[in-house]
Length: 185
Image (tube, rainbow, N blue to C red):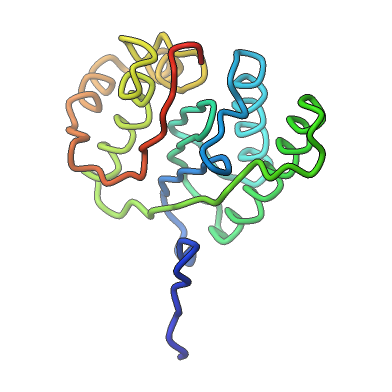
């Protein structure tokens, strides 16, 4: 079998096993293309819609002006993630560029995924994703941020499970998340 070569300017995507994945995608140059309630709503709705179309079962998500995170169970073919995100990013870039009058502008950069193979990693990333708006200083309580799954999670999961997930530490979760955001969303 030939050796896999990792390219220096793009993350390797090794989507060969069905499972649960943590995904982060960013806008080009971390530009806040989706700043504002309407844009964030379109980003969130687009993510939820395209994920469902491709059979990715989202368990946690958080959308921001210049990036998003999600935790999802893959369909039988986890390799569909790249195609799913391509479809999502092309649609969102077309919409935002039309809105801004910037045809052809590069909107999205790339994505990183991590397969979650240990329960502690899985629970920590669920907690991390639900609480990411708090991490960025946008809200004091995660469920108050409208473009993440925290409120949905609290409404659809037992109180005991919510408390259990919230206890998992996220300080050792290695996520590329140095995105500057302001409180104006």
